Length: 230
Image 1 (cartoon, rainbow, N blue to C red):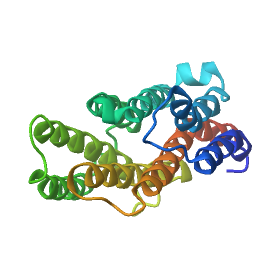
Image 2: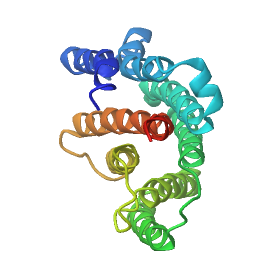
Image 3: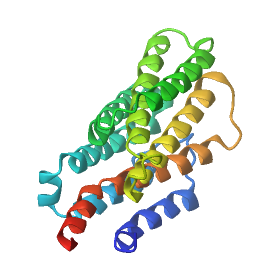
């Protein structure tokens, strides 16, 4: 953690800039898009700081970087969601979850975690269903399925019961859960009812989630270092 912390300083600074400026969402602009995306850009730099060779040789890390790129595009679209770009942002984040799921992998399978995540996702959609109409009825269903699947793969990787967990796998798990909280808050606020302090909840959990998922990309590097010391 000590070795990775300094590389995250730009991310923390950029996040502080976003919350300090707190630009109004009622007047979207390219400047507000830049401020919103800046912390994610810093996470690109965080991963790139580990070296291009590292990203090329470790597909999980490169997929997380690709997910962060699609996330930034999704963030930009959501700046103009009132102008009809909400679905575009939804699509970008759906691709992000596919990339993150691929990065987390399918081993171990952990069907119990999959069942639990399926129940949680189904319950969320069942609650939202009566508020949805038109294309959102199926678009939200697909999106919830994708983020639920991503959450399953992140939770399955921890293996707390088998004492095989690492801090980076735990980071991915917590990050995935925070991402789900952020997106659920968006859905409630967008389709159901106004959520108090929704913007703060959405962005705080979102930035924390992306940081933790980016941190999980250094897992393979930690394993290599451990083998060398052994």
